[in-house]
Image 1 (cartoon, one colour):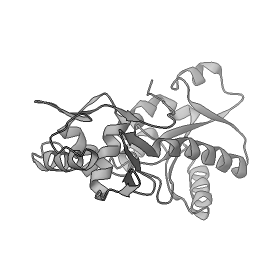
Image 2 (image 1 turned 60 degrees about the vertical axis):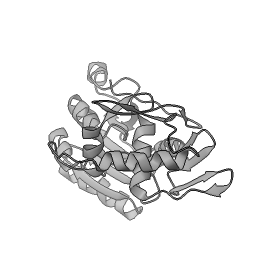
Image 3 (image 1 turned 30 degrees about the vertical axis):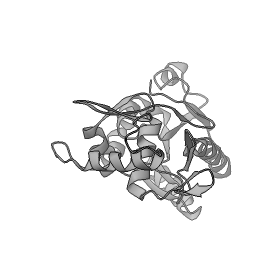
Length: 236
């Protein structure tokens, strides 16, 4: 899932030139980021952990054709393409619509500024309201009428995942894979127990399923969640 930003931003650099990839990784580490690199889209997918995806993926434009695989594993990461102004438009057309760009050559300060801007956009999605409940996924705090509501970290991760898929049915398998990081085939009722606990905390009536609806045989759907500002970027 997309982790709340109450920790060092996680950056993944994908560049075919190992020297460039290593240099950018080192510079971001110097800026107190959690940074790693890959030299191909396939290698990047192998590095990604569904339970702890990057906040930002910096990817060389020539590797853009494999980006859809990255989106499958890290659908909430902000993606910034590094592209030369001399590269043909047909190459740019192969990358997702609405993608963010930075033209090479660039200074690291300019790149870091763009990353900071994208992180600021992403952080707008870390506060959600559910009726009279306000949840801040950055600080891991929740309140109703000024009174604190105690969620566990895992409950907030589940709620954040549902909120980022508001109106969409999320299966138990998806929650186990993307929140727990468990492999396919694992069968457990722990998801149901956590959902029941979340329901009790977001409603005064423990039997009120107004926000989280059980879709029998499938999973759960969250409705009525509102983000103060959304930056929708759907995979192409």
